[in-house]
Image (tube, helix red, strand yellow):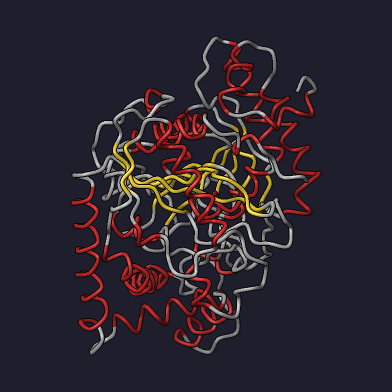
Length: 489
């Protein structure tokens, strides 16, 4: 990897060391990533907006900063950002016609933190419209393709970010996770994806889908990189009401190679009916490796209310989306339908033309659940069951340090396979969405392949214990070679 053109293959920690030693420059690293984009982007279609000129300017600024002897872990390292995280001066579309031309006047907190480190932002990644989807096929612009098999989905809704990292278009990326939107695409693309605890990372500047579920998190090539990005993203901000003033540790100190005395539970409810047998076999092999690393593994763990999580999620999330998306009325900002005769008609036309079918479906589901006569029967009941689910997680972590499950019950499915069957699409997140309901952290790490397609393993811990999931993830990663494999593009 001596040639400048090959620098895109580096991890964050590898690139940081080379930058620190002045063996490479940020401009060289950024040019390598942009060259890689030019080669693979037409096949994968991971990006909505590429900001090559400003990226090279940021890289030059980073090199100047490094030249003064100042370098931080993300200084000069190229990243991509999911297109629902506000970036000042760079359009933020949410994968929707509604915001196709929207350019935020401010940065999200996480972007401010990246800029404080002199990180290099290459552009914005494709996603399911307003993060509503599990395949990145619901983007208003184009679908993203899985780099391991271009006929398959990369997962969603952060599919663009996951595909970009898997193909080395960026050294790492940011995504958001409402019901699995970081972890499921990470599993489908064989990279690392972490959903932090609710409140651990500021949501200020994240365009809302379901505000009690959304979280921003990293998608990276390995677990070490994940810890490095979390060291930057995590932390309290008074600008955001759900941000929790909880101390932030140095996550890299959790990266040890053994799991001695760690108690790991395997909740059987996550090995669902209809789970692909080869995925089950891969998980069994991975669990066996955790035992070899010293973990105490218990297969009798149980989270019985898990079976209700899918129904709870598809009442609560659409209900919150119905409220959050009411702001798109064609008046304040975003798309506005022309030639309406009055304000009501203007709003109707704007939403009819600006929103795609999946967003409309979820708005209608949420509006129905919140309507008079159905609020108690659906929304209130779902909130009560959510409390039970959270209590079960709280109880189970009195016995176990971490839980291990599949990230998804299947490998990546074919493009178009589930578009006409929303229920089957929703089932793709059956293993991930209970974690958002409970507000706990979880990570997906590469755990094998089935006929050339990646399998992800999900590791879950109690709230604000990202350290434990990173410990388990790192020990497993270092004992296997799945994370070293790259798609044959």
